[in-house]
Amino acid sequence: MKQFLTASLLLTLMSPAISQTTSPADPGKRDWKKADLSNRSSDHLMFQFGYTGWTGAPDSIQTGGFSRSFNTYFLFDFPFKSDPRLSVGVGVGVGADNVFFEQTSIDLKNSQQIKFRRDSVTQYKRYKLGSAYFEAPLELRWAKDPEHMNKSLKFALGLKLGIPIDLHTKAKVTRDAAGNLAYVLKEKDRKYANNFRAVATARVGFGNFSLFGTYALTGMFREGQGPTVRPYTVGLCLSGL
Image (cartoon, rainbow, N blue to C red; front, side, top):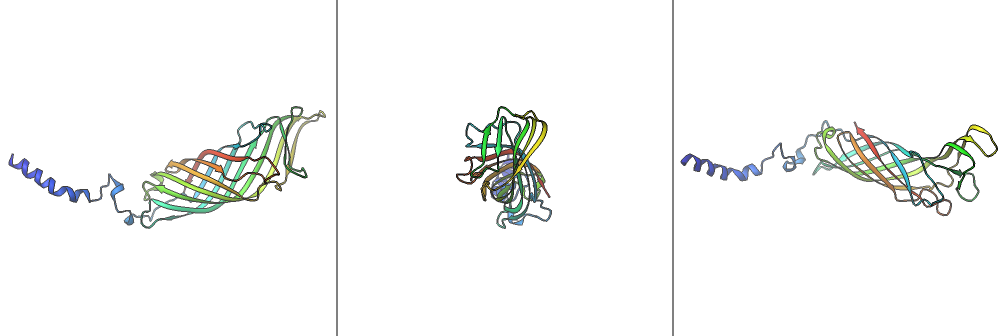
């Protein structure tokens, strides 16, 4: 009984010191200012692939198929000195979207505005509107274990600012109204593309893989020269290095 009371007293006296000591099992209580970031790999290079859709599109525009987006970015990562679990990522890259349509033709060469027309006569195997942007992404990042980023839970919220570098259509015609068969029709003109776009971004994942989502805060086309559509994308992100 005496030994039990002695042990209990010692544990009671030691408990404040234990509570202030960093525990490997509870990294949330450690002093992150002393974290070793010498081997840190912080999502410098990112590849994103996802499904793309349009919000605000009128009923006359009928999208179809698997519209998709592919993005590539290189970012520099700047950890907070006070808490390296938080960091800011900033960089440059290119984002490309391909939106597919059914029974719809698109006129990029119209003198006043981009035209989307319902077309039930011409038979298309595939019809797409492709766009590409030079972008500067900015992210506020959080990682549970900043010393081992490739094995850590991660979150990121951010913004992408971009300018258009391409807008084109590509149609694979099976048969047109005149009876012509099997040819490809292309148009390229970015005059109706909004000359600036801002996109909100979010990521969540573990290690080198994450889910991402984006939503355009600006319209895709210039005001009064096309439908007021705002693209969004959800998909997978591969990051590392």
